[in-house]
Image (tube, rainbow, N blue to C red; front, side, top):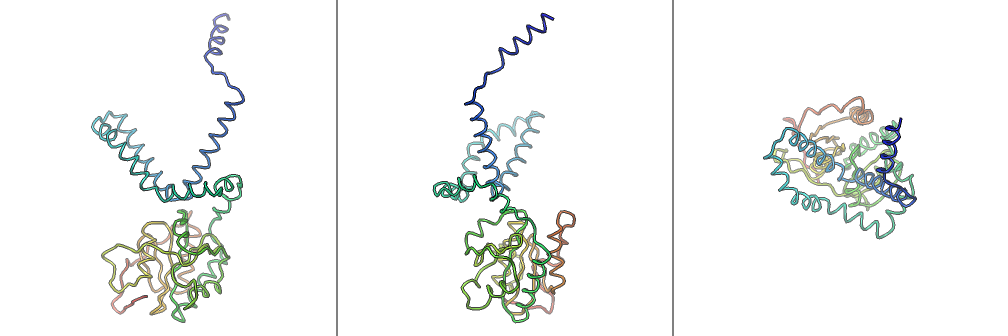
Length: 293
């Protein structure tokens, strides 16, 4: 009994004391870490973080099996790697500092509903019908269009290159945006959930050298965004009126309204049903010829 009592007293002596300041400090650090992770998830830093975690797991395996050469190389590269991460993340870090300077970051942190609004979820059946209807109508009158459908990976960097719209998706609005000689017709429209977030957005062009030379800028931009994100892009040809879908660097062409609805529903149910891989890769059939502006 005395032995147990002495152990308890010894344990009490070793336990650090905590006062109200320590509790407040823990809460502040936890609060900051949580919102830093939220910020990382809503930028391209999320993909970078996952890559760093994979490398970290590999180094743990190397340490467990005592792979000294790999550990030596990792320790010497670490200093350069930190600098490389800062260079890669420069746009995101600059944006975060600008928001902090404008107090937007603090305001968004205190408003917990912002996170819920940013994660609006996938679109409804009504949105699928509206997008399909708009694409069919624009194809009928040869109106070029470029519509990017966001999935899990945020597209905030591309949204900032355009003009904010923040409107519910309707076929009339999409047709009006891409109408010739209107202020918003040039560039891409980005759709998140059931809302059009931005228009006239700039997209990266595909650098695939094996693409058909007849593909115009609109198709190359649709393929380009699909190569660097998990977004699905709908392209309506200005020359032929044909509807194409770009996903993971693959281009499926010549879709009608029903096939387009099916592709959108595959995204809607992606948790259970992956998008069917297109049969063609940026190519054309023997009788197809298309050049887009």
